[in-house]
Figure 1 (cartoon, rainbow, N blue to C red):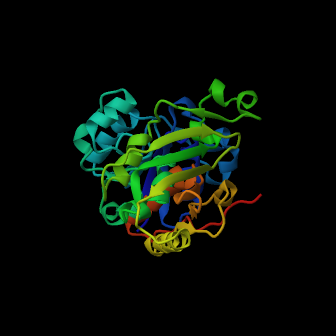
Figure 2 (tube, one colour):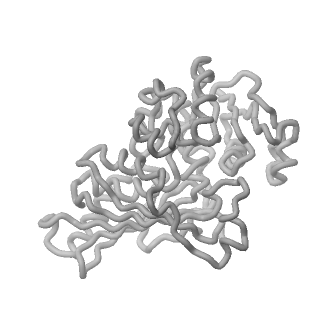
Figure 3 (tube, helix red, strand yellow):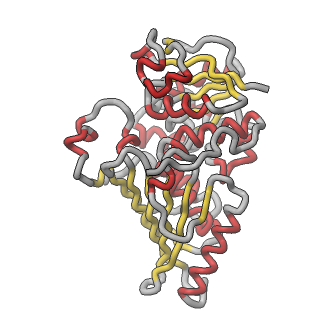
Length: 344
C-alpha cells in the first residue's frame, strides 16, 4: 500500500535530499512539503534540480498523511511532532529532539527545555543496524546524527564483544553541508576554502548520542570526540583509536584477522554496511546510503584503528530516514536506496 508522505522544512539540505529519494521510491506519494520562508513558491524555484518532482511549498502540511519527516532544528521539531502523533501519523524526526533517552542530557547539551519529554520513551533511536526490530513497529523515530552514525557503526562490534577498553578517541571530519544551508560566516567559500580546522572543541552535541548507543551492551564509555570541518561539500570520515584489552589475542596478526572477522560476522546481513579491504574515502559514499568500514591493528602499539565513511546527507540524514521509513511501513529495507556512489 502506498505511503502518503509529508516533509516539514523541505528547503534545507536534508529536506531536499528526501525529495530526491522519495521521487524514485515506488511505494510513496509525496503529498505535502513545507518551508515557511519559501511558502508559495514551487520546489523548482528553490531547487531547480528537483523540477522533476515539482510541487508547491506550503506554510503548513496539508492532505491526508501516513508519515511525516521533520527536518527542523531541535526544539522546533518536537513542537510539530506532538499534534502529528496525536493524529496517528508516524513521525521520523531528523533533529536531535528524540535521539536521547536521558532528558537531563538533552537539556544540558541543547540548552533548552524539551517541549514534550513524555515522548522520549516512545521514540526509537533510528540506527537500523542496532534497532531494526524496534523500528519496524515504531511510531516515532529519532533519526541519528551524522557523526554518531559513522562513529557508532565503526565501533559497536568491538565494544559489544568487550575487545576494547573504555578509553578511546574518535577523530571526526565532515564536509560543509553538515553545517546546514543557512548562511554562516564560518562556512562561506573564502573562509573554508584551502582551510581545515577543528570546532566544538569543548564538546560537540553529538557526543551523548555516541555514548548512549555504545554503552548499550557494555560499561559506560567516555570517548574523546573531536570534530573538524573539511573544505568539501559532503561526506564524513571517522577515524577511531582504541586500546585492545590485554590478553585478548596472542599477536597483532591474530588480532587484525580476528577483529576483521568479528566485523564481517556482525554486519553480514546489513545491506548498507560494507567492510572494505583498503581505507575508504568519503567520495566512495557520495549519494548512496552505505557506511564503509576498515579495521586494522597497529603492530607497534597494539592499538585498534577503525575508519568509517558515510555521506552525511544520506546515511547520516535523509538516506537513513528513508531506510527507517521502509522498515516502519513493511517495505524492503533497500527500496529506493539501492544506488551506487557518484564518481568523480
